[in-house]
Amino acid sequence: MWGKIERLRGVPGLSVADFGTRRRHSFLWQEYVVVAMAANLGSNFIGTSNAFLAHKHDLEAIGTNAHEIPMVMAALAKDDVELKASQYKMLELWQQTYEGALLVMLPDTFGTTQFLAHAPEWVADWTGQRVDSKDPYIAGDEYIEWLRAKGRDPSEKLLIASDTLDVDAILGLQAYFGGTMAKGVVPDDFRYASDFHDPKKWTADQRIRFSAGWGTLLTNDFRGCNPNDGAGFDPIGLICKVSSVEGRPAVKLSDNYSKALGPPSEIERYRKVFGTTGIANAPLVA
Image (cartoon, rainbow, N blue to C red; front, top):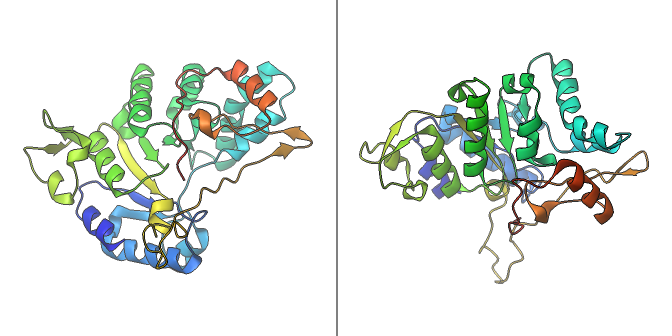
């Protein structure tokens, strides 16, 4: 963990938050990690999604809306037309509730590509987008192009990556979205903060404000630490989602076929309604 923190220290424009409550090794370990990040990354560590730890350590309680609310809205839909519209109705109710704050959307519940293709104009005024199961490089470029098509300035918007992140991915994504890489340089070439300070490799010029919601491999990376060998300390894949609403099955399609949840017959119905454009068939990673 200290090696990861050291690699992130001094990265220009870095924005990283703890999103690791659900899959943490333990409460005490998560607290230790959060305190260490706050002490060593300063303002580049922007907070934690754990409200108790945020309160205890005077940090920002930070996060976005999750998959469950659009899943519930969809399950309550009376027909396929209402089902397709439910993903936008949810955002409409959300912004009414929070009066213009907390406007970071999570469009991958039923597929990001279809979501953006049919989104009402006012959705482009939201603060940003969280990427879950889609390749964050592809999802970020897709969001940037969509914003430009809507006449919005992507550099003023926020892109949050939050799925299976570790320090290598965070550094690569910050290089890709937070500046301009020199010809022949790729995101994997950014291994330490010093790489960002080499003008032959990178110049700061953000295309979009990038932020990392770091989860499992921040709060539960004990791989290789089992004194008896084996994989007993490896992080678990823990999924917590709505299963039914007033007796109706709930479904999540995701941007990854492998992460679809719900009865098979309902999953197929939802796929007919929302389509499968832009959805990948990637391995499921904890």
